[in-house]
Structure formats: C-alpha cells, structure tokens
Length: 298
Ligand code: ARG
Image 1 (cartoon, rainbow, N blue to C red):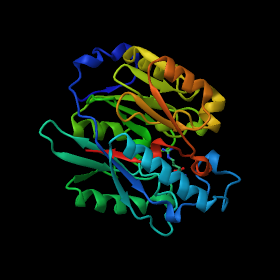
Image 2 (image 1 turned 45 degrees about the vertical axis):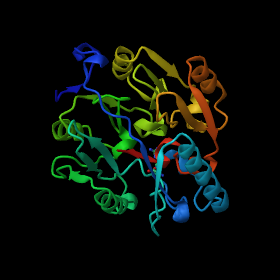
Image 3 (image 1 turned 180 degrees about the horizontal axis):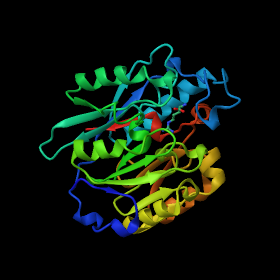
Image 4 (image 1 turned 135 degrees about the vertical axis):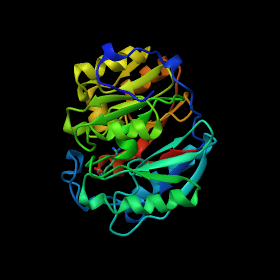
C-alpha cells in the first residue's frame, strides 16, 4: 500500500485494515549543553535571542528525562554539539522505522534552515551505532524534510501522517511512501506559528488524537476526523503559548505535556488518559516542547 491520500473521499480503508507496528521502547534525548536561542527560524523565537536560562533548561531537561524513565522507557542520551543550539530537538532530524522482519531503518532529514543542517550527520552517526540502516531522500527531487517534526506514525500502525508547508516539501512523501512501503495522509499546514505537524497534532492512541484545528485546512481536518473516532482539540492560547499539542503519549495512556494546559488536560483526563505535567519553559522560547525534545525509536 503506497499511496498518498490528500482528501477524505480518497480514504478507502479503516485503521484496523492497516498492518500493525510495535510501539517504540527507546527514547533518545540530546543534552542541552549548547542549547540557546541564537537565530530566528520560527515566530516563537522572536525576542528570545540569548535569553535562555541555562540552569533552568538543564533542570527541565533532566526532569523530563526522568519522566520518560519512570514510564519504563529505555533512555539514551547524546552529547550536544557546539554551534548546533537546536540539536536538543532530536525529533526533527530523522524518521525511524521498523519493518515486518524487525529491520531497523532511519530516513535522514534535509533541514529547512541552514543553521540546523549540521545536526543531521551527527544523528546519522548515532543511528549507525545503534544498528540502524540510514536512508536518504533524493535531494534532486525533495528540497526539505524535517523528520518527526512533520511525519508522525499513527499509534501502533504502519500509516504515516505527513505535513508540508513550512519545513517539509510536499513531494517528500512520494519518496517516503515508496521507501517504507507505507500509505501517507498528506496534511497541509497553514499557520506559521504551527510550523511542524508535532505542534498541532499529537497521536494519543489508535482511536484518539489531540489537534489544534486552526493549523489545518478543512480538507486536512476531514481526513483526521475520518480516521480518528476521538478528536480532542486544544484552544489557541494553550496550543500557541504552551505548546499543548507538542505533548507525547508513548504508550497510548500516559501523556507528558507542558505545565498549565488546564483545558486540554481536563479533556485528556475525561477521555481516560493520565496526564503528567512538565515545565519546558526554556524550550518554548525556541518553539519546542516535550514531543520534539526526544526521539522514540525501536
Ligand atoms: N528552534 C527549533 C526550530 O525552529 C525548534 C524546533 C522544535 N521542534 C518542533 N518539532 N516543534 O527548528
């Protein structure tokens, strides 16, 4: 099944028809030694150049790492690199994958901003040490692809939700669909504040998703509603100021989320999820939070 879906009427399957994929048990986090706001490549970074409280950033990172560990995930850490202040957002440089035979592969990204391009080879080397085969897009065909910033696996299923518009070229998904032999639901992003899919869509379980609707086109929203029974929505304040949707739910039950998302947290609890709040205040200054501060892998 290698097809790109661009409207709800093309969707001729239900989630239970899609082959299953195991839930990743490993988490990578990149140490924030060199994390800072040094340039502006998204609207959230304005006014924050040089403004990261380093002690606080370290503390927030450590508490989040311990939070993943308490859920029983295996924690892996990688040293940061000088002059790569955004490498802490290690969801963005790649898209990992495991096939039916258990072969582990990672598709490396092509970062949109020149300042972030140097992160990709560092993460690629790390993958190779973990026994992953690394793959590359044909740069002659695709200009940019920002990994799990824009491409999210459906919870437990071999179905990819792929966004384009700000950081990833739409045509990346043709190559990805072929490389991984997977269907892709292509979603256009329309609000610059929600520049990555992980800022406006959070996979919760096979049937449930958390979204910020204003980031999508009506066509995109129709596809989301067609495939999820339970669509939880975040309001603009919590989505934009608190990055509520940049939460993560590694096991279909526990949700790790930025502190203070009162409205989203109530909706999550009402739907049966367990909410764990973490401060990522220093990382919000760079336009990231819980989801993109880690990479889940097999
Ligand atoms: N400053 C980083 C950038 O703009 C933040 C990335 C955060 N990642 C995310 N998936 N939202 O690239």
